[in-house]
Image (tube, rainbow, N blue to C red):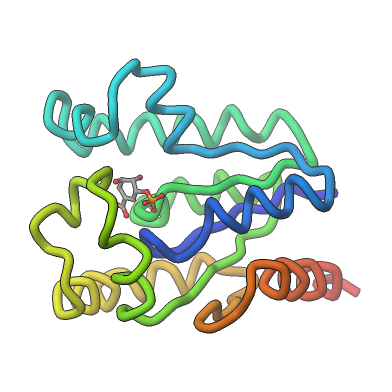
Length: 171
Ligand code: S3P
């Protein structure tokens, strides 16, 4: 099985989908944010505060290169991974890119109880989220091989759709 890279805005469900796919379909899970936190020994918020966003983006790029060494992985990417063109080409080298799309209202519901995301700190409202999504929309859409809409769907259904769509590519 090719690698599956899950991209999408913060709170689009990448981690939940990755953990379901890894459990039900025996794929190796790579949680990019979590791995970075473990390796750096500090939270994402602290990495941003101490070293800046550019430093964090460099770690993401290096991790994507490292990931190419294995197959059958489901990779839950940080929401900003598509901001670098190079990251998209690194992902393509070893797998397919799946965009999980959700409405700003759905995103807000999913992120509101959590303070781990420095870019949303103090900005947890639909207007801010919609604006940031709009700024990134083109990036997400251009990167995606497959787009799955997640609003109102169960995780199992989303995973089923992903696998169905991935399998039909190249047939
Ligand atoms: C970011 C998304 C976060 C994390 C960091 C930056 C972004 O990941 O990588 O806070 O720029 O969208 P999640 O999408 O897993 O929340």
